[in-house]
Image 1 (cartoon, rainbow, N blue to C red):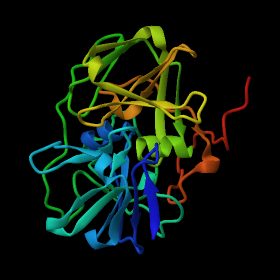
Image 2: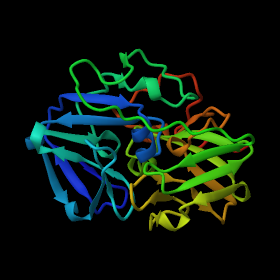
Image 3: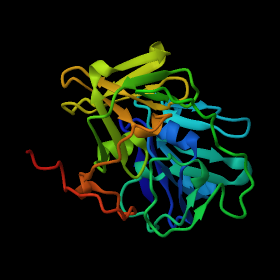
Length: 283
């Protein structure tokens, strides 16, 4: 059995191996919910999955007429979904620990991937679901761009924001904290100056969670849908924006992979960006 947990550790679960299917999903709903450029899931028969602790802390948001999203109500990490009627458990791979004995087998919903994200591996790509799947589309409405601003929102749309001007930097972070916070292979974090950021609606619906033993690490999410949201760091004068929460192109590509020493064992980096075991060297 491999085990997984949310960022705060309240929600824990186990999955019996072997795991039969693993895939990257680029649909807009997955990007919004996880705050990542893509989400990665493993799928197993429901009997191979079990809650170990904290099942009562899991909140659920009905993201469509036929689908739902689960998350930890304290820290916002995406949680597994168990679907007894089709004997399946869908589990975010970013929260699983150790060797899963499997690697991703395909990309799905590449037709709605972020326009500024390039897929660089040679896995099969499907416009929507792989052949053999029969399920509704997971696509949200397109947002009209605003000159000079980058726009974003949560999955349910209750919370929205805008940032003026260009980002300071964009980083792909593979640290275990980011993987658990985003419930994904890695986080892609977009950094802006804090004074350029503002909530345009729903600030009262934002839940902030700071990891107790961390100096700076914290996350923010919508309390209704669990969608990952920007987190303002006043002490550093920056706002950290989850790339998956963006509705429009920030105009900057990721600059590097950081903390690759903590990279998930099942994820291969196939692009040509610089890689650093931890942080880049100071200039």
